Every structure is written in structure tokens, then in C-alpha cells.
Image (cartoon, rainbow, N blue to C red):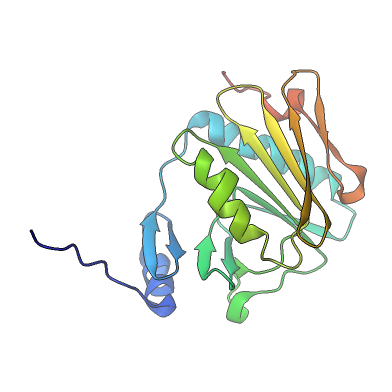
Length: 189
């Protein structure tokens, strides 16, 4: 039986490939992993949350990015595309690349059946190595569900779950709330 050889790619190879690719890929410590396509529910939820946050932070010193802005996680050697990132003040760019940042405060991921375990465990473990990262929100695209993780100290996170349609997720950043009515507006569950 022949062993499978896994090609290890350099960061430069990955970034070059991403500049010309029709579809996005993640880079995980030398491996290039194609990202799965989104659904209309996923897209609607991300758009709803982005609109709410962008409006809420309009006159504050925060920036909201979605989907196409890449995140570099140096300690884990990962490039990924979170659904939504909020950055306090100005973005810090990886090697002056305007498409890749390194300093999110808040990350929001919309869960899909194929990525939910990775988002809850692997990605969250990687995100926790980012010094500026303080809050993580997970939203289901198939049912009313949200989870919030807030950093309370060195290697300490507070976890909270939300299941009811009339609930809202209170963000730690400037006491902004995201209601499920707004998150799931025009979403067919």
C-alpha cells in the first residue's frame, strides 16, 4: 500500500494562490484547505449581524469586517476568514497586507453542520491565542441558538447559551445587544 504524501505549502505560496483563486481557502500550518460554500441562511444571518454592528459602531472607534477579510493567527500558523470580526481602533495588518488583519476583539461565526465542531473547538482554541481577542459569538443557521464566550482573565472564559426567540445576546463591547429577531430576520429555519 502506498503512503499518501501531504504537500506542505509555504505562507508565500498560499497568499499567492489566494490572490488568484476563485474560491477562498484557509491555511493551517502548511496545509491549504478549501472552504465550503455558504447557504442563503448563512449569508442572511451574517448580513443581518454585520448591518446591526456596523450601525451600532458607526460613531465609535470600532471597525466591523465580514467574510472577505482574512485573519492571521501567528501562534497557530493559521490564515482563516471569520464570518465577522470587530476591531477596536485601527486594524493591524499582517505584513502591510490590506486583506489580512491580526487584532480582532470580537469574532462571530455562523455555524454550519459541516464546520460547527471546528468552529466550537479548533478555531476557538486558535482564536484564544490572539492577545486582543476578548469575545466569541456562535450563531446557528438551522435553529434559534447562540453561544457567547467572554474572556474574564488569563485563560478564563465565561460561557453563556441562548435558545429562545425573544432573547438577545448582550455584547461586552459598549453594551451593544443583538436580538434574535434581528439576527434571524428573513431567515427560513
